[in-house]
Image (cartoon, rainbow, N blue to C red; front, side):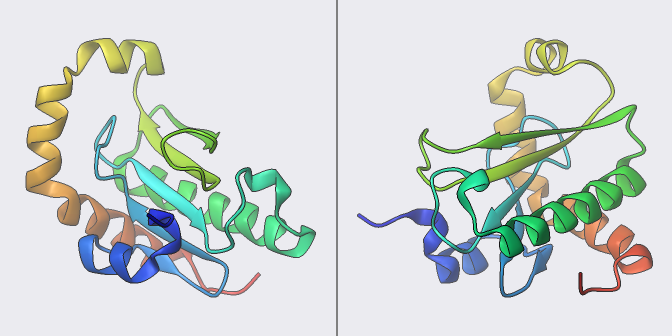
Length: 143
């Protein structure tokens, strides 16, 4: 079986794309930790985002800041947390972006998985549209 994140057509059909260009695709996490949990996925398959060629890495960081600003505008959290992932279930480097009003440990302990799964099924598209709307006022494209 191939890499799910490399199968971009599968991602496009199963999720609302928040932002996509030649280097990245941003979609809501289908098992979110909090409402507004976004994945920023480089299109190049690398196990670690830090292994990207320099130009692509800089672009990913630019998009990370852009999406984080959109998440901040859409949810008005106390902070936007970011963590880089890879080498795990998905062996394709990617970045998680989460709006938080409390620490991540508190968020995890206060939101049982069954509750997250339930609201995730109902509202992934709505959550993505909130970020898209916020981006429409701030993102102008390009690097």
